[in-house]
Length: 328
Image 1: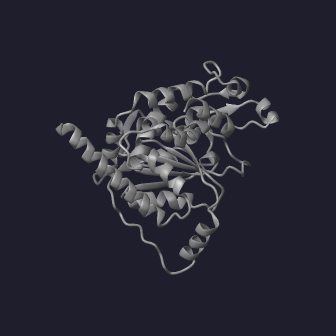
Image 2: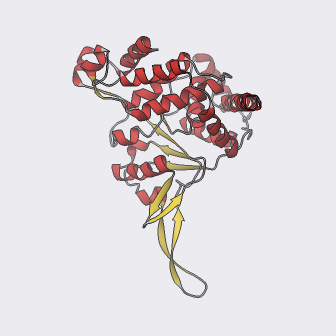
Image 3: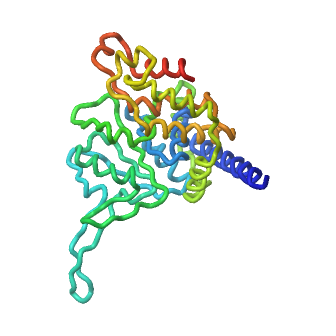
């Protein structure tokens, strides 16, 4: 009984904390409530995020604001074609001490941060993109045979411009799969844009208060894994992901159009994210509503369609919507 009471108190406390963080971010990032909601859900689940949107939609500002609200040590990489792996993870240099003795010294790169922003990640070369793979999956990097642990918690929030593709290198499927979500950022509505103009073109600067710590976030991540996941919700998650694969689907659109489908990592991501999403919204137990809210950002970047889909006017969004309608 004490255990149940203790878990209930933890859930209430974590839910209030997450709602306060969301409210703090919303004071700065106007008109993007869903984007904030999804990003916090992903971070609370311990996942990495791709922020997809045209320039000027506050992608960079969102990352900065999250870092300030949760007191995370932040780093930033501006990805360009000439960026090298050592520019991200660091390198060894030959150093000399006071006695004149020479030795190799490791200089840490920007990846040694709790919140790493990879701006325009698809502008980095494949070799440099792959430097992030080990960091994102294992939370450590290896230099000259020596392994270095990254700070905890560790998140990568990468940005991409969906329009300008000249001089870019599309992320390979293996790296895309390591991002828990692809969050699309759209233009704000008229009222939000008006409020944004007034807030950013005057001297009334909104200050972001630090209302949580990295340790709070680690505890929330641990709590998300403790939350119960109803059998019916788990069954629906598994059915949704398995039916997104041409080999195991009961949906004709998937058989006809999908050439790359989500693997088990998508199932794991959904099972964690629905619990975090429920927690942010003050609920102890996730429901099918949470699956419907998260299916698109979790599955979208893990699927690819064939040329026939383009000619028939079929999109990944429409395929995922049909999966949700049928299995949730």
